[in-house]
Length: 356
Image (tube, rainbow, N blue to C red):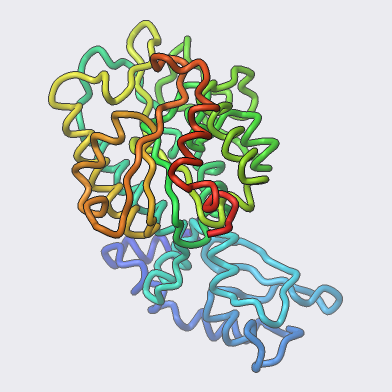
């Protein structure tokens, strides 16, 4: 949470928050003066001057003297080492802090995952403006209500560009709609990805489609099939994520009055095209960030929308189609075997094993 004083001054100055923080520069001098027994010299990466510049003031004691707190968000960090970069540590542990977001954007220190997340936030703003068809009674956006888990997934597994990116269609009711992670059935998220956290409720929840987060006891068949195959071939998530990433084209789940799950391909009217166009625009920015050499569309719908992508038209980029793992898809009873053959035939497993 931001300091009330900062919010009050920001409102009075038209909301130009970075300028507000600069006008409060006198606080930086106060922060410098607060470091009474800081254990690191000025030659270290986390010197007093650099700590103060990154928004920290000293909240330690003579016995525990390496504790510092952000003057805006209130995040307290300890256990510092001489080579730690205060800006990067601040951003890593308090990514929603207004001071560090604005300052790091200006310094271009924003990590890739946060730049990616910003494209998702911008897409959400555009999608919120659209009017869905009347048969859609509930729309879930797990990037919003499951943001803690979603951001943990990005933070941990998007540490740089990826050579191979898999793109699914949209959140499944018992997968990403519960966990905020593409194809993220609960067991995969908890056991194989080692992620944990709380999940809120969507603004309007369908009684037949409850959101229980990591307490959901219904497995997402698509997620079980996809992630168990990928991680069996790769060995573990850490190896897989070195060169590969899994993403969804659309962040929304759609349900009708009866609670039936409707995919983007099943939507009607102008909303269908508007949704596709906004998601395509966001995906273009996301692909530029990730810089994949190979893009695998999971299902026919995504393969079709990728034809609109300028990034995918590059001669240096390969676009392939993997059948969707959903049991709803025709002739899909032996999907794991078919998918493994597809990955072998297209020489993709060496990416998954970080051997490329």
